[in-house]
Length: 344
Image 1 (cartoon, rainbow, N blue to C red):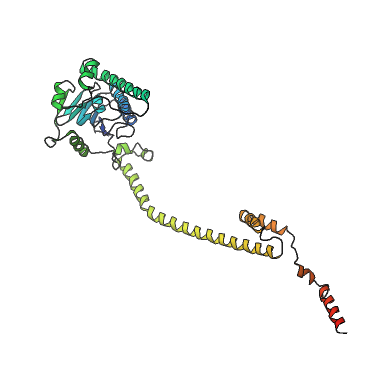
Image 2: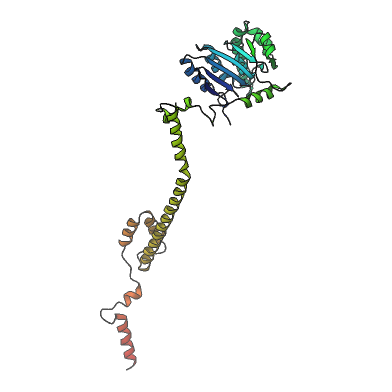
């Protein structure tokens, strides 16, 4: 999604803050971004133009922006380019000079919201909506030079009040009307909103950035001029060209490491099998104890070898019987004696 909130700096040093899109922490116009950029521009002492094309949004975020605009000591001028609806209309009427494009639309209406819960929770929700409407009415009263009861009666009656630039000017909601590129006749507010969004050039969006903003980034902070910034960009592009080759090399190295690890694992498995087979053959372990020593070998080969070596081999019966003290064992001698007695 393209980012609608932006700040532009003109050659004469004046700044433009663009409030294009939905207001709110999950929208395009985030109060934290707007307030911080406004403060930065305010400290520079330059004129600030605020341009609006917004369908409104979160009331609390809008109140934060309203207070920042109204309380700012900067020379602020507000322009309604396309649509200033709902909370965006309240922002536009913060007390700073405001003018509308001849094709723009302004809309005021009651606060909307919803909640889920029991009757007490629902009553709290209604109380909160009424409290917000009181606050918004107070905010608009000074601009319209009337009291909040009149504001609520005229605009917070649960209807949408869409006004053209001429109607808004006649009612004193805006201070003037300016020309703009025309829109098709009989365009709806939704169409006007889309048309002005599509016309917007975003010098600071996700794909573009002017050099002054670029120089604020840590990598470019020491660039003395535009030429140095462009050289830094060239270096980044050259580094980026190496990425595919490095990724391929990384893949090949991973494959080699994997092959080496597989071979080591296979060699260790073969050695464990050999050690266990030998221990089982000479009676140091049996089928029941073999898994225990196998686990020891897997955990620590040196420890497993030491454990097996500490066991005493158990000679098999026939090996003991056939053990010879010379060239002839006791069993063989006895069998020979029996055989000789039978032959007598």
